[in-house]
Image (spheres, one colour):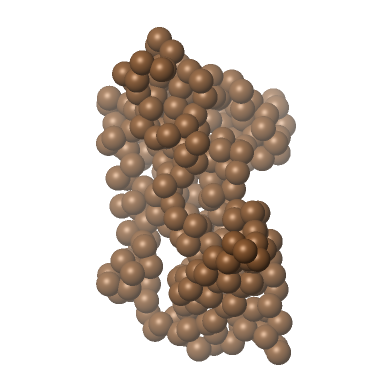
Length: 299
């Protein structure tokens, strides 16, 4: 172990797992104190594994945010499910998140059966700020029956309620070990990749039901101009049909302008720089059904 680290230093990989919309990405952003994961009310927002690192004097946690566990149909969903399950075997701790408002169903039974035997399990009952407190006990009892021995912590990833207890529970579950990343590392994602995700988030938030799941974003140019505190970015939004392209552009280009303006604000906070963002829309027919295109889009 690094001699500079305190005795008993703990470290490890924490896989954030659960059904869609359980609040996994919201929790990751709160853990890091910075937005790297996109968040929308729509299911299947997260498409691939996303790594985030939090380092405290006595521990380092490497969080892996995963797509929501679901019954996959179609190649895109199959890839997302595969990405989620790949995070489990190497996890020192599985942080299993459950939506207090949605309760438990047969998918939780399936998740319990997939938990790796070697991993510690911490169960976070999320969104407790949105339900009556007297409704929590039956859910907690059901959770305990699914994962005997797991630590259960009621939290709100949105407000931070229960967050210190959750961090302490995760720390206690970690093995002793070294730091895997420098103490100032937040993520291994590139700025280009985060920019693409921020644009996709705004598309999902601004458009109707048929659009979000047929959208991918690529960054075509990323030109930093430090002498002007400016970053010039060009990105393409990929959709499957001409009708979707028309919706995204909007009358007189208004929808695309709104998406760009909203994304630019997040990107400027990320880069701590002024940003000029230019967006284009391109039709890639049936890209969600092609393995080669999914790979190109990082899924």
